[in-house]
Image (cartoon, rainbow, N blue to C red; front, top):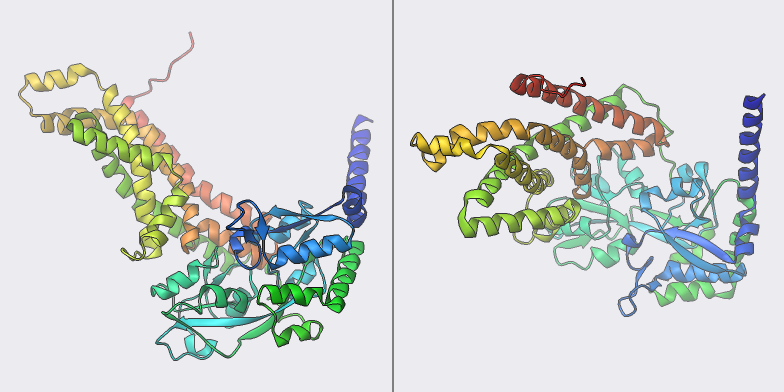
Length: 488
């Protein structure tokens, strides 16, 4: 009886929650706020922070959102969200609508409601200044960069390309200027501001494709869609929309064709986890494992040297090693990767994989330094005194007496750090390395769901880390014997 009552209560709550979400327009008007989401990382001219008034958001989409909200009788409130997660976050009801250069595609129309278009864009191909390429066919087989989950990404995949994926709009053009990629395909709004003006880059005059920006609305929010469409129509008829676009230097004759442009070519039909997908995941796992091993091969010896310098290196060695450890541990590894790959690019041009290995290796060397410093301090002082009595030099004492014993003490922490590094390797996707986690995010788009790719990704991470933990435990037993405390 209690079980039936519990089921009935849960069902009632679910129905109530669904009903509560069914009339988002009424909810918006009741609270007086339209919550719209975007990603500030998209930058100018979409939505970004005003240089003159830090904290204030500006951009042509900010003005459109404010105008829409005013016509709905409410005020607009911006919600920051990662661009690649805008659609799933909308489906979770984290906000009311999404509007951030959201392209009208058949794939998105299957998942959410799309408003009437408010802007026409053109896909623009950027190539090195000396290139003679005039179309995508001319750069076939080369490294072409774009943003994940954009129509440009779908277009490249449909044409047989394997795009190089970036998170921000400026980075692909910076890498194109430095020769790291062979081309960039993105909307003209982005290309005109971040790529075409660079002396090393030439933008192809002929447009590759044309499409429209729309507002995304949840499937069950039909009333809200009607209200937004009516507001957009009113803005077009009154000239308010054109005035906003002209103010941001975005108006062009093609904007008169807003309602004439159909959805862009549909993305491939949703795939299931098949053998090809599993192979791609396994390749991502191999990249992750290889990256981790290579980075740890840097971190381990360098960390030992830092620990030795901090304990026995004299005043200069102690200060230098301590400074290195505190700086590298005190700043995010993501920031260090950005600096190493993008910040130092004018001076040292590292490839993505090289930068990933060096960055993670140098970062984890700081953690290994503290592990081995503690392990060296755990060796009884009498060991070094006995070595000195036998006539061993300081180097010989370290090599033959202290380090062999300290390594046994450090083994559990070292194993833990290796597993942590295995997981932290997912951060290198920001510098275009397609490892296991990045493969999962790409697959989630193709499969149109996060659950199955996420479970497969987690299973592979577990398969990589669990054997290592078991091996570490076996080594500990072999080195120390079974010294676990026992209850009386």
